[in-house]
Image (cartoon, rainbow, N blue to C red):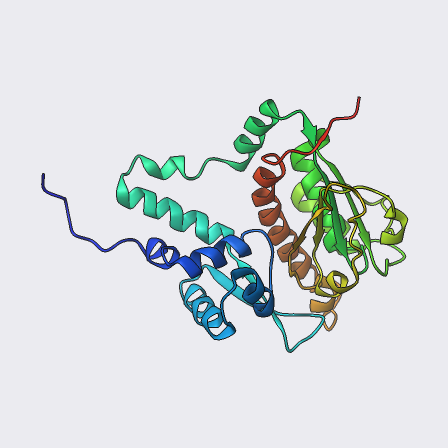
Length: 273
């Protein structure tokens, strides 16, 4: 048998094949994390973690954002869309028929899970003001999963009303109307049980309660380090600041799509009758 060529393994395979880098990818697939948190999770010294993060960033799989809580710190984020494309390319490099199999639509994954699981995950999205990022995430997840999940959002310092651009972008881009929704304080959720608590703001991550008083375990805590679109557009005119909200909603929607298979692949509470 003669191989068609002697090409090197695809870039994704070369990057992911290293044990430390694979463990970093696995950790960042679930939550945005800081270097010191990755050091604890991976169990390797900081200089080694930083070296492999630099390689993953050079390969386009991981990026970093300055923390809005502490500007001296950075959160590392796995670009799941780039990973999906790289995995598809790697599959196609092995055999052309593998390419579509690696890009199974998220909706199809969720539908498959729905037929095999009679349980409902509960999800809480948090940001500081509960006026843009977290209500956008709440609306987009509810749009995708309907009654198959319980979804809510709250803030540590809720605003008096939703940001008009958050309302506008959901209506224009996704045909969702949340104009009548009002921001809520996370204290109003004391005693509620959640399977997933997802912070979208570096500041609220530092003050979020544990929600861990429900045996046998507390919720899975995830963090998405997403800049406040209102802060991005603060020095712009009201009309010019809208694109920041459009970009934020698009990023959140991408993360929501990749969250769906996780929600429906883990046992949760039975659906209430």
